[in-house]
Image 1 (cartoon, rainbow, N blue to C red):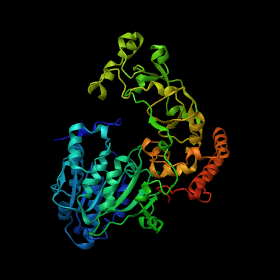
Image 2: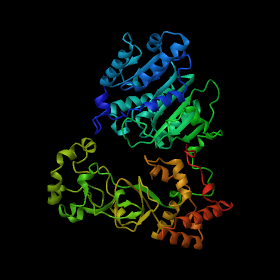
Image 3: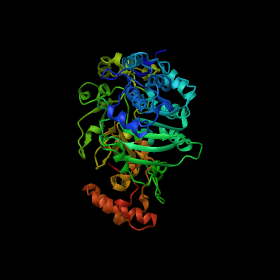
Image 4: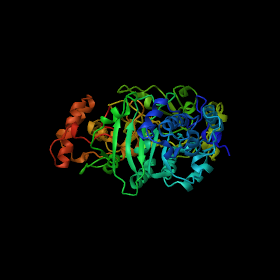
Length: 531
């Protein structure tokens, strides 16, 4: 059964979802890093690529086996046929890879290269080396019946995980005791909730040898918005797995590997501890202090339900001024005049569209598009939004936190706007309380925590996400002295970041009963060493 079109779908560039191909220099770097090198007798090892696409890894693996065969005098074709394993779900890519190999090895047998879904495949052996770039497919893009099959099979299928998490588990279950596993993929599993069970699996049964951030490197054959990292995981070798890893950022893959790794600090980091905020005793979460964290409205069709022209097209009482991340850039709050068409009453029930002729006329232009949304196919009315609108939210003061932002300045809406789905918000307390909290969230003390527990987009921009915001530890606002409170509020209004950092450091030290702390005392970020 060829599931490719159904499972993957198509991206805007014409390629399938999940397909981002690896550049040749990254292929070579990864094979070197995990020790699959031609100076060894490669006839002794089985190697697997679980999603081989058009064969980029396979071709370099074959090249290395040929080089090794010259030194160790074995039959390269026999070893390639017998010891190189792989899987590819897409028929066209599978055929292209096999054709590439056959042009190099005319009598090649593809008996160990399967054309099927790797996650549903069965293997009768374990592997000494496993390498690859697993597909990226979000939870919502996996068809329900396939998703159910995966959930029944994989213990790491948790929350709304991406499919690459399952590739980790299936590969690791087939890793030889002394084997090595090397993937290049998103690093979201390191911090996000959906990666929690994968982290637990690796911590319990395996060794994480390397965790290498390569965000600044052009690692793929096309430009992608990703969080790329290379991991090397080894089998436990029948002893208790260690809890340390060499964790660093790599800026250049063109240097010899031995030269690059010599720069890595000798003292390894306890990688499990890097998922936690750190030892921040006598500090509290935001929610523990009476605040509420939420995310703005998702419509399922923003271009239809959100724009600045709606004010002349639909009834006024259906419109709410809405703020999105584009309004919060360059450390400025510049509302661009967009409105949300709100099809809900104050009690949360859907309006009768026939009672609003202007809105009905406007929306019916897009009825076919709206009916094709997933929520409508599941039984919702054709003009529903994904999320119901909380009418009371617009009038509440709130801190606005863009999901992806290069801003240091955080803004407090005094009760004029409704947040869009790319805005997280915090409500609770007075405007002064929220401004005080916003100042603390702007500090290096908090930013260092975010660097530990949240993801960054390509380019290093921090991400505010609900699951990360809820983990932050901050001083108890009610115990901040009047003097420090005034200092923070003044610094907030005047964007005096150095004053905010100094004041927050003093407050934290006071509440922890320790000496005053400075930026260098803040918890280290996950990728603290750069080369």
